[in-house]
Length: 125
Image 1 (tube, rainbow, N blue to C red):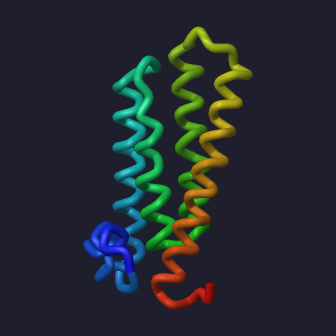
Image 2 (cartoon, rainbow, N blue to C red; image 1 turned 45 degrees about the vertical axis):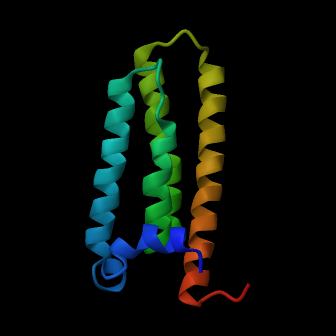
């Protein structure tokens, strides 16, 4: 097994089966933190890459549906930020960017879930 992937997921492994509610709360707080950083940084600097963290971790530990929820919700909130900021971009361009972000994060959630299942031995690939 890859040592990098093992070192990333090891800190939360004891909580995986025992406390899924606590993990869900941790991912929610992480998502709020990512949104806060994104909002504070303003429209000129975007930290959308931070959205990968809650999507990846929630997919890995809580399943693909939680990852899908974050993959859709986080870019939609960011879309609201752009509308609120009244950036010089047209609404169509911002909507297209949001759809691309959602698609990329959905794929990330799916791949993280598959990797998690393979790591647990629940998937024969």
